[in-house]
Image 1: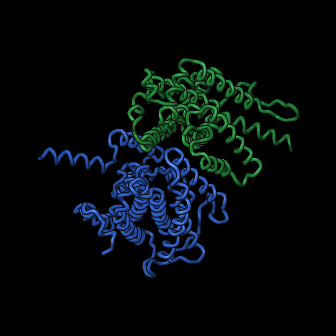
Image 2: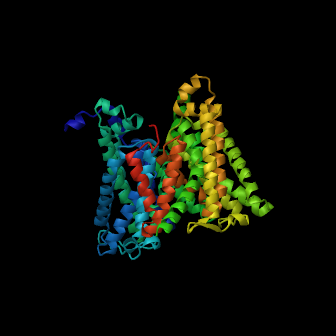
Length: 329
Length: 287
């Protein structure tokens, strides 16, 4: 076929193959439609968070760009989708594409700054950019509704037929399909030579240019892609909940998604998804008891994960299964 | 007009000095071990709560609580350093960030559990209330006190870093850790002591901050951002840098709030972004 596929190393093809567990996992995502009908809106929140975590995974887990401000693109997507719908165009799919394009443009602009920095300066700049955006959304209340949130978002039926109902059936189906499609793209991406180059940058950003891989260009590319994905997640949230609050841009959201990704296992495609499932379901169950102390357990969990499970839950599982397999041999 | 300008600069400078006391410890320990300690403000919060408890629960005078706040934060920090932090000195920044964010979460929930989420009241001695007028400008006494305290701390820090044997060890470890180890300096112990001192200063800052910015469990997060700005703008490991950055930040924040209130906290973030893009290693950073 093309030159690129001819140059594709063989072992990348091996990793690209679908595993039985993966197929089982995606089939299991259909279970809420049958078994947990009253939790469908929670399920759609989980899918949206998983998508957001997946986008962070691409820059943090694969390219090693630590960001404390990833909510900036999530919020941009959410506000864009909300505003498009509020001002007379409530069609979900085109709204989703437009909103993610806006987030992607912002990500592309920001990527020129991001690619130049590393270490503490990088963390502070990502944080600073998202704080500036949060302040902007807060003060531009004529546009965004400020601290009261964006009201009056009216969505048209999905594909002209499926209404967004109170139980969240449409919302979950919509979020799940979008998550799956974006996941397929991300899966293709990380198993490509480009994905391999990203991992090289994570391991040593200075050596990569020496073997002919332009670090800055790669970082710009993946950062833009991640911004588009985060924008999709934000737009989904705005469309399925028909409201946008200032919280979508908050530091808390950036920190939460980081926690989710680390908990599940960064640098693994399913890390963010697994983390999102555990985190969101646990929060839903515990917040009934006392929302204030929820962060106590999250904090404790973080300490334990960093100390004992450096690669998250999936990393721990992989290590144990490797030990088990070696023991059997 | 000019009077109000000086008033704004004075208020901003006092605020900046508070930020300096809160952040200088983090700057030195970050420069030394490259350890990103996001829990620094949790130690400040601890100092604040110790001071408040002693004042309101046991009737201690304000000044007697300050050293206790210092010691309490220093002791707790050194316990955490020995048990948790030291295992992560060689780990990535991300792991360090996550561990310390975890500690912040636990601290916030713990403070909310013990003290509730309300603002803590504080009673200052009467001579720290009110203000003095000089050349037609009002100076709040407490802010004057803050500035004097911060200047005293700065002088004490600079002299002890520049002119004592311990200070020489600290400077050596900041400049080149491996070389310092090679010369037989016990970098781990030097670091533990510096870390305790830095956290103690944060605890003192937390106690001093109550009157100006209040104290509630969210403190550990809300001031973390300001402290990080001071540290990254000033440059790691530089006391001078932290001082200049804190003063700059305090003044631009109060000037922004006074002259262009619609910008809000914008200005402070934009100043940070601009400075960092100009000099990624900070104003006085070496890297």
